[in-house]
Length: 380
Image (cartoon, rainbow, N blue to C red; front, side, top):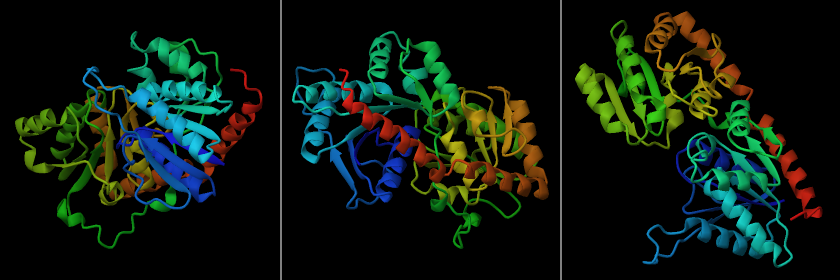
């Protein structure tokens, strides 16, 4: 099947999932075309089954904000016609589903019907999408999709609660490619990050307010007061400067390493002992899943789709949002004893393995087939 994938090409979870899905589909023999404003960060190598088409937005002084969704819909029309694309899969409702629908309508004028799958990832629904300015367009775009999927049961319910949705929403969880992760590095170089007697705690995110970055630091502060430890902070975002100042104020600056964005997440996680994810909201918790597949237990907030990933008392522990005391207590329970830590490490890997892409990919292929068959109805 010839499939066009539209996504954000950044380090965010939706872009990572879309890219990994496209790569896996290409390996299964499908022809995959990525259409976005730059090459996705996880798309390191193009091959005969993977193609990238850049969306260029011409600068025009009349517009205060350049109309990316118009440029995207036009690019979709051109690419679908040129390569005979059979199916369109858009990740993130804004503006991709809206642009996808406009492309469908333009193509239909030429007698070309292209089915569209929309995958909902999180803040496109729970944050941006429910804003009164965008809510009508998001509702319209979702209802005009041929198939709608959500990355967690929690996000599905949130979508149904926020919007007047007439379409069925199918839950297909995020996934991990277990073949791409290994903790058996001979050059792990843990000694570059910490002393032999220190535990390594890690946090990876886009450093937005929703991630509760101060909670990460306060939890770690309590940890390091009882056991030798280092904190590795991976990512960039608006809360990073505040986080660095907080570490300085608490007198733990020398124990916290800020690495910025990285393409070597697995290498960082290979020497990590614990992962902190105290977010106010997470539609799924892909960062937690990546930690778990690297045998890193997770201390997280009990919110959104995280409990569908991090199993209480098995792969780690859950606590109420903002409960720094409970998170620190459970973190110390895991970290203080080698046997307990090793048990949680193995449990984390076992839980994460259930989300292997080989288990999830057939679910997407099923909805692709469903959407592809819908072209014969052509009810638009």
